[in-house]
Length: 529
Image (cartoon, rainbow, N blue to C red; front, side):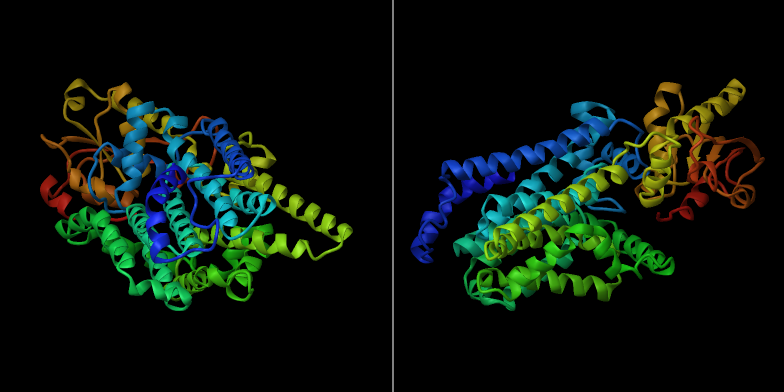
């Protein structure tokens, strides 16, 4: 998708740019490919298609994840912004609902698709840096392990990752062709990323620093970077206006989440996390950093090295989570593949074959390891599942949501008709809200209400409920806030998997209305998670 768009744009802009910024022979001619180029590209597409196929085959094995249920619920209420994230991911959630209904495989399709495209873009960056087929394949395969995890769920990280890779791809094209008009596409990519996750702002600062700290600063004297900035601002403008109208509520949300992460020690392992994310591909991105910053062959791509270093430093200073930097590695994998290909040519045949075998084994192990823990493949309660569950905590949150809704329906069925007529369900977290509103209608349950994130502004309904089923809240809060409360049930799941919903959130209460009245209660209920 991105490549076809880039080719069509390049065919229009590069001949013009060539008169202003003469490029070396055969550069800037992306509209025409040799048969070898076509074969290399077809091979990259085949590799990426394999990852998409794996995602689609595995996607339906467990169930919706807690975070996906939030995306699904927000996708039913399209807006230019949400408390927890920008609008792009809920938009794709809504598109998936329109095309595939509530199919789990369909809901995860676009997330898996953009990850597959990212794999292709990584290989294409290696080509643009001077790499032949081997460098392209190595770079693409090195990006697969994290892409498998990022594409396993419909989540904003998937589209954030894609936008970073797309931005790097267009910058590589710019640096290769000396065509500053690529800044228009860079700006569009940054705007797309800001519409997926606000951490793109860190990468945008890294891009600017990379230009200033390298020979690419010459492009800042042209109009094109500033037009690219204008493009990105135009894309972000609707979400910015939404934030203005909502008193920048996302800033309060992000501050709360960051304080929580710091308090829980989730940011202390930022540097070790970089090794954990890249695993056996660690030497490759180190080689890529060397290629960009120190090698003579990589001089034209110095900006990429500085982009990475500055972005890493910004996250380190800001105490970001380790995975925030993950989308910056594909460009270094591409550079590392190019450096490695050149280095191999200096070795004798025996040593070169040994290195190739080691690299192939490392890439294969990385991909298989990622599949084992990132995808819902392991049989429930197997040793494999227990290991994957310790590594990937999202797996347990894909199980038991239909069981929760069935339990709520049983509580509802125990009520007399007059109580059912004015019934409400108050849920504590966004997973519960999404699950109840997904599975509840077929069981005749009312829409769930909640004070969490964007659910709060959707209110408690008219007329206000007089009988309330409450799930997820602690007993002390429920008894202090509502009239006539009693424990009605405790949540379990049919597979016996232990997760939040069967431990700390298992109690389900049946209560009357809030003691202070619905209007007063709702004013104090807004919270973030």
